[in-house]
Amino acid sequence: MTADLFDAAAMYDDDYLYFFASPESAGAPTHGPVVGTAYATTSVTTDIVWRLLDLQPGMSVLDLACGHGALANALAVRGCEVTGLDSSAVFLDRARADAAAMDVAVEYVPGDMRRLPAWTGRFDRLVNWTTAFGYFDDPTNRRVLAEMARVLRPGGRMAMDLDNLPRFLASYTPSRITATRDDGDMLVDRHHFDPLTGRFEVERTVFRDGRTRRLTFLKRLFGFPELRDWCTAAGFTTVAAYGEDGEPLNIHHDRMIVIADLP
Image 1 (cartoon, helix red, strand yellow):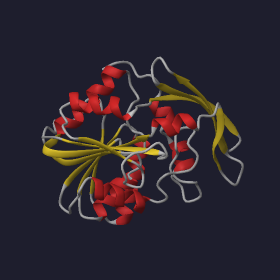
Image 2 (cartoon, one colour):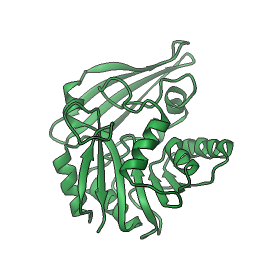
Image 3 (cartoon, one colour):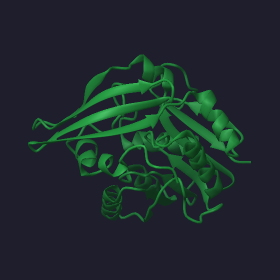
């Protein structure tokens, strides 16, 4: 595997949950200049995923880069057999605790999306949500797509939720206060977009409980034609794109949902 481009463990930690996954937080982050959160609630997200993936109770679903398990647990409530994989032990601990509180069974697995377990042909559906793709160099990102195809059964389907590039760039700002809490804790981000690599780079300052720390992270931004071609090269056939409302993608959508089918 190639060297990591940033420290994911420093990014996806307890501070992240504190600002984005607690009852007092403003909800899921946008990870960039887009203002607002496209999916108001987990229920709204689940409805969109359920419809676009044509899910049915009993289907086996992999939530790849499942984070703290909000979507995985919601799909399990609706009767899917869900496996969630993530590299963050902090996130997986939270996901398991929430699953237990909801009395649902989800298999949560620590792992790296660049090299998935021996799951060839195991899943009916795969979901990769909240900009959970594009954190490596381009050859490695392509390898992740190939891994997605490998673990799906013939006729399987994948859903990927990413930033909609035209809308993202139109709302670009050099910096912003990304999240705040009533006690004054906040996240402040400085942004840089590199057109030579297509990477959006962020320098984040965390102010919490009187302490300050800094970290960096990045993600690859995609236009649909490029990602469609990548998916096709990875073995997917029909590849389509929708916005956060489930309608065909246009420049006004905040999110780009890519749906890709295996033959």
